[in-house]
Length: 356
Image 1 (cartoon, rainbow, N blue to C red):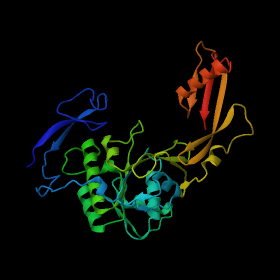
Image 2 (tube, rainbow, N blue to C red):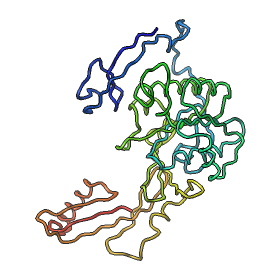
Image 3 (cartoon, helix red, strand yellow):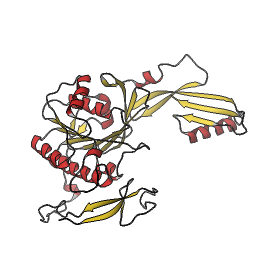
Image 4 (cartoon, rainbow, N blue to C red):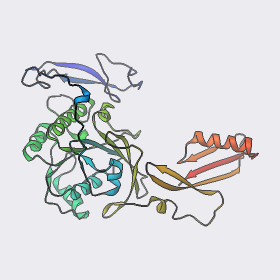
């Protein structure tokens, strides 16, 4: 029987320590350590016990292969990915609850038709719940296979038996491995599950998309090493009371991280916005005071954005500066330049700058 040992793990970065620490020496977070029991199973990494004979090769003798991509059928998603999904890649999609992660991925599954099955693994929703969303999105694809399971061993057997073209894991925080005694969603479980999935998809050249939760700070829940293990990290951003969504790439080994895609959440799902400038400046009046149109480059796409400014006399001794959608430090620099070079007396006025 495997002997269990107790370690203290940082919930932010996954740093392990033999004793509890008030401050993590790796990420400098306070009160982030919690106790966890891990079984020493030496057969996990090398089940056969045989030594692998690996010989290093010269890098110049390695032949570079062309990257094979799969079009998602969604233009904005292909733009952010750099042309489509790379075969055998591991993609992590994060976002707040209700932002549209599962909706967008389910629409992607409907676009991937022919030449292989699509395996949708859900640990949060039942088959009936996913079917209701699929009917609302008018999804009719015979290649989509559903599996409601959280045990990684069962999921691995299903992947190897079906050999799908695309695997969806929704979500990574609900999966668990019996080899680790900690609860699902902890640092050790998330790290082990991601490592298992990565080995499966790389060995069988299967494209895998992982859906992850985010913390209150907007970061992917789990250890920071999770983002380093995957090939691509995508974030879906948006305001709670607005229907527009922004898809942004923060890491992409096969493309640029400067591109972004825009969607609008409707009853039929996430609808692409091919011309974001028409949405951003659609409600603008003719030559309003304190408003200006600014051209901004996001990757290869130029965006027209409206900037609004408002100043009023301050009744307090120290004026207040407020920025919405704009860097506050840049606002302070602009005010200093206007006071010094343009001669504008803004030292007694309140200033509000808003980026629409």
